[in-house]
Length: 98
Image 1 (tube, rainbow, N blue to C red):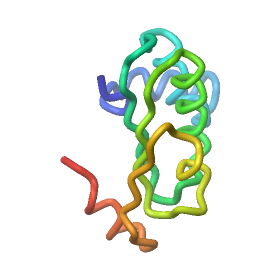
Image 2: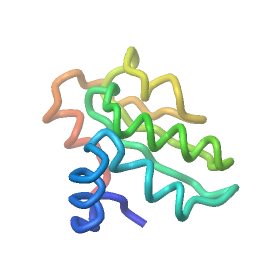
Image 3: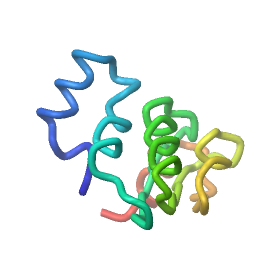
Image 4: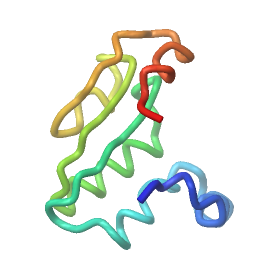
Protein backbone atom coordinates (compact mmCIF):
# COMPACT_ATOMS: atom_id res chain seq x y z
CA UNK A 1 0.00 0.00 0.00
CA UNK A 2 1.44 3.36 -0.97
CA UNK A 3 0.23 6.12 1.32
CA UNK A 4 0.71 8.95 -1.15
CA UNK A 5 -1.09 7.34 -4.11
CA UNK A 6 -4.57 7.87 -2.70
CA UNK A 7 -4.83 11.58 -3.38
CA UNK A 8 -8.34 11.72 -1.91
CA UNK A 9 -7.10 10.48 1.48
CA UNK A 10 -4.02 12.71 1.43
CA UNK A 11 -6.14 15.77 0.59
CA UNK A 12 -8.86 14.97 3.14
CA UNK A 13 -6.40 14.30 5.97
CA UNK A 14 -4.33 17.34 5.02
CA UNK A 15 -7.34 19.62 4.91
CA UNK A 16 -8.98 18.29 8.09
CA UNK A 17 -5.98 17.60 10.32
CA UNK A 18 -2.98 19.21 8.62
CA UNK A 19 -0.36 17.80 6.29
CA UNK A 20 1.86 16.80 9.22
CA UNK A 21 -0.63 13.95 9.76
CA UNK A 22 -1.04 12.54 6.24
CA UNK A 23 1.23 9.53 6.78
CA UNK A 24 0.06 8.54 10.25
CA UNK A 25 -3.69 8.05 9.78
CA UNK A 26 -3.49 5.23 7.22
CA UNK A 27 -0.98 3.15 9.25
CA UNK A 28 -3.25 3.63 12.27
CA UNK A 29 -6.01 1.97 10.27
CA UNK A 30 -4.11 -0.72 8.35
CA UNK A 31 -0.64 -1.48 9.78
CA UNK A 32 -0.26 -4.75 11.64
CA UNK A 33 2.54 -6.30 13.67
CA UNK A 34 5.15 -7.80 11.34
CA UNK A 35 4.36 -5.54 8.37
CA UNK A 36 7.32 -3.93 6.63
CA UNK A 37 7.05 -0.16 6.17
CA UNK A 38 9.32 1.88 3.89
CA UNK A 39 9.75 5.53 4.89
CA UNK A 40 11.26 7.88 2.29
CA UNK A 41 12.48 11.39 3.12
CA UNK A 42 15.08 13.30 1.12
CA UNK A 43 15.85 15.74 3.95
CA UNK A 44 15.50 13.16 6.69
CA UNK A 45 13.42 15.63 8.69
CA UNK A 46 9.92 15.35 7.24
CA UNK A 47 7.49 15.67 10.14
CA UNK A 48 4.75 13.76 8.34
CA UNK A 49 7.12 10.87 7.56
CA UNK A 50 8.35 10.78 11.18
CA UNK A 51 4.78 10.62 12.46
CA UNK A 52 4.12 7.67 10.14
CA UNK A 53 7.29 5.93 11.37
CA UNK A 54 6.21 6.40 14.99
CA UNK A 55 2.79 4.87 14.34
CA UNK A 56 4.28 1.96 12.40
CA UNK A 57 6.80 1.23 15.16
CA UNK A 58 4.09 1.43 17.84
CA UNK A 59 2.17 -1.21 15.88
CA UNK A 60 5.18 -3.53 15.74
CA UNK A 61 6.11 -2.99 12.11
CA UNK A 62 9.63 -3.29 10.75
CA UNK A 63 10.47 0.18 9.44
CA UNK A 64 13.07 0.73 6.73
CA UNK A 65 13.99 4.36 6.22
CA UNK A 66 15.59 5.80 3.10
CA UNK A 67 17.09 9.25 3.30
CA UNK A 68 19.84 11.39 1.88
CA UNK A 69 21.00 12.68 5.27
CA UNK A 70 22.40 10.71 8.17
CA UNK A 71 21.78 13.58 10.59
CA UNK A 72 18.04 13.71 9.91
CA UNK A 73 15.45 12.21 12.25
CA UNK A 74 14.48 9.59 9.68
CA UNK A 75 18.09 8.41 9.68
CA UNK A 76 17.95 7.45 13.34
CA UNK A 77 14.37 6.32 14.01
CA UNK A 78 13.67 3.27 11.81
CA UNK A 79 14.77 -0.31 12.43
CA UNK A 80 17.03 -0.05 9.37
CA UNK A 81 18.15 3.00 7.42
CA UNK A 82 19.43 3.16 3.84
CA UNK A 83 21.46 6.28 3.15
CA UNK A 84 21.77 7.49 -0.43
CA UNK A 85 24.88 9.49 0.52
CA UNK A 86 23.54 12.44 -1.42
CA UNK A 87 22.79 15.74 0.28
CA UNK A 88 21.31 17.35 -2.81
CA UNK A 89 17.59 16.64 -2.98
CA UNK A 90 17.31 15.77 -6.66
CA UNK A 91 20.20 13.30 -6.47
CA UNK A 92 18.84 11.67 -3.33
CA UNK A 93 15.40 11.28 -4.91
CA UNK A 94 16.92 9.75 -8.04
CA UNK A 95 18.32 6.91 -5.88
CA UNK A 96 14.85 5.80 -4.81
CA UNK A 97 13.28 2.79 -6.46
CA UNK A 98 10.48 3.57 -8.91
